[in-house]
Image (cartoon, rainbow, N blue to C red; front, side):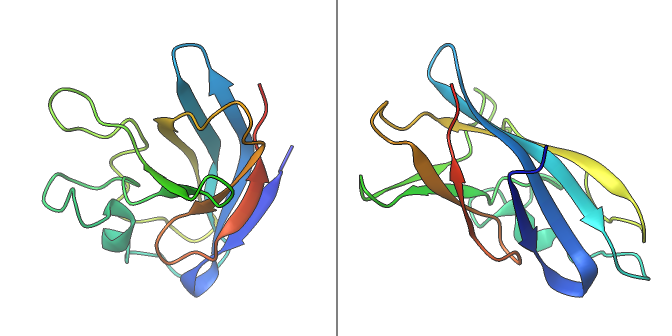
Length: 130
């Protein structure tokens, strides 16, 4: 089930399927990156974010914004500074769909929705489940 569709550049679309609180204080966003255009999309550098430049292809530039709580959440990283997110995406061929995930610290239980952002895509407000 698609709960939000974010439009990006050159036919790129990010479909969000779930925004789920997980045990242990994580919030996981899952979905698919789809290229609905007619040519391969290669401008994925912006998806990495500023903090992780040089660490490989990823969607570590994704953020969540809790507008009510006035707080921004960044993708979690492991002890070696690798993101807890989709990695290895250097291009998306025309017609291709790639599974997407990103884990964040979970907002307070009183927060029921957040704004999801990924560079080059329009933001979307999504409801949190769990």
